[in-house]
Amino acid sequence: MSKNARMALIFGGFITAIAAAFYPILVYPMAHNNVYRDVQKTNRAGVNQADIQPGGMKVWSDPFKPAEK
Image (tube, rainbow, N blue to C red; front, top):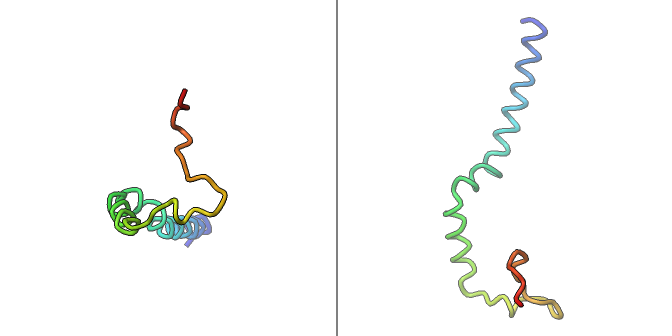
C-alpha cells in the first residue's frame, strides 16, 4: 500500500469516526425535534416557572418580542 493511500485511509477513518460521534449529538435531535418537544412537554407539565425561579430574578421573557409602548 502506498503512503498516499494509507494517509487517505487514516484521514477518512478519522473523519468517519468524528461524524459517527456527532450524529447522535447534533443530527438526530435536529431531524427528530418532535420527539424531543413531546418529551419536554410531558416533563414540564407540572412545573410552575415562577415557583422555581431563584429569588430576586425576573421570570424569563422573550428577548425578541417587540417592546410594548
